[in-house]
Image 1: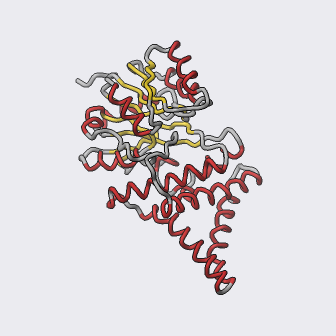
Image 2: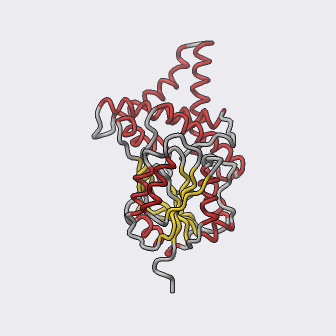
Image 3: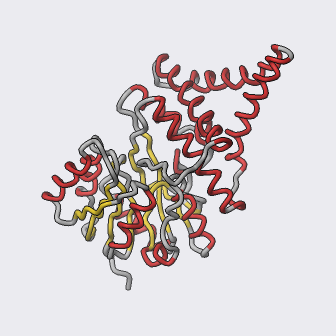
Length: 327
């Protein structure tokens, strides 16, 4: 007979998260699941008081264990935490998110039912400022981020990847965890190896996690530039993982550059494809319901920033192991 509530370990990489960590830890403390035996925070170098926030919560919850992640890398932090974890399942949590109170309960139920190697749900982008609200809308749009279910939802079942996730601990350690050479897309890459092992990566819309996007355009550009850079690295490692949707942003960059060069050398007509793309971004933003005109304008900018940054990163980004950043 399967134990009703097997022991679970929370693993969390934390870096420069002073503004959001308290909210995340509160959402873990409020979980309806009663057998979360430890909450392991791998804290990287931070200049914003992150460690002080974590230490304050240590006093309130004896399950919290702080370890040092000198590199600051997300994959390294997750692996350090997982190596210390003793739970039957590992629940990955991001320090910029907020879990619903039944998150762990539902996740454990699903992973037991399906026998999956990883179970996850929806990254519900949520804005607290007008810029974040625009980015959140873009991140839940197929036009903005493609057709991955974890961005906007869909039917339950096997998928390529999910947001965050709960992992079978034995399988996770058997696969040696996350690839520490990857600063972004390490979750996608691990899910490739999970599926290659014959285990499912399972998406369920019953798991909805609030995620708070970057708060300004430079941060957004940097984030998506890195996404593109590291996606290329993952594809080089696993060529069969390439999806048609991943070619759209770099193709856009080639089109924009070609359009500009041919315009300068020949005719203004060559600007038509580029102008068509920009007008499409404006049109998609305009038809969004329930948001102000100002927010629609910001949404257009968010679409363009995300597409262009991802494409540039994919084509020209130099994915360096020293480019550490929080998720």
